[in-house]
Length: 340
Image (cartoon, rainbow, N blue to C red; front, side, top):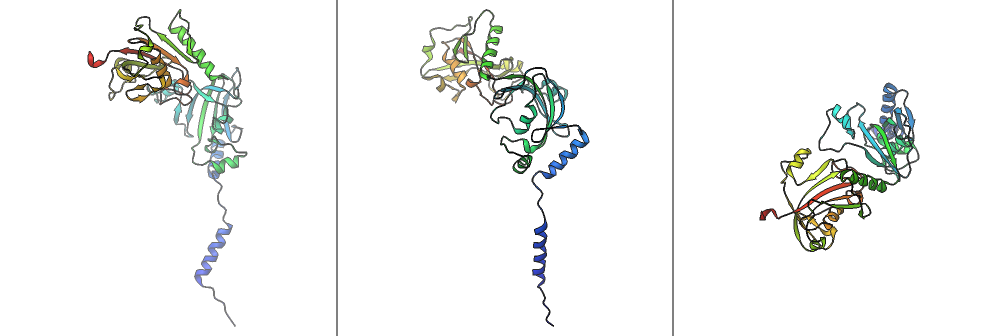
């Protein structure tokens, strides 16, 4: 009788290969989906699913108008993780209540573009049917926090990984279809409030300049429209009065933006043959700041007001300047500090 003996190594390999053949790989995010389902069952068994996989946890309906698409939503929001820890908020009261308030941060309504996939999918599903005055809290799974679009939840779970799950509480304050017109209207209201009896007149669309009657300067703006070095003090602020930058030490301290590492006092400006080429201490500047300087006469004090296309556009800057923010710059041309 012939006995066939398989080498032990070959037999082990066969068993391993056989095991691999029947083992199924867990789909991406499946474990996270199981966790979220269990979390909802425990904490919010009555949660309502919206869209692909956003879950509405609570909802206080508004009584105003709905979103305009394409358009813009002005919202106040707070974001927490699933343990209730605040990770972000635009609500100053909420920040103060939780000890997270930061004096160097902008609090107030934020502008969300609700067109052309400018919001992540989860937020889009959350607010798409809200109306102004309403407040909604929703769980947004990590796989819907993407600007890409797919047809099914399975495709989102497969293609979007690594994001943490978030709970958003959003109040819809206002909806706007033309964000630039809204900014112009807001600037003109600010102008009339702060300069009573004067009517705002635009130098260019979205840009306004006002010369101080107390420091009108001498000569004409053309006197500076060349390769000239001047010195200025300035203060930049939002229309709500919040100062975000200044060369004046007392103004910085009064507005809680003082930095011991910064040198306060007049700064050097190199004028040029056009406003976009002007430099501040050797650096380029936003176009609205340059346009303000371009309107000024020697030794004048003036105010430039302009919408976000001349400022920081759709993204804002740092923690103090939000997206789509019109800005105010108060500028005074002063003597060379070394000559005083």
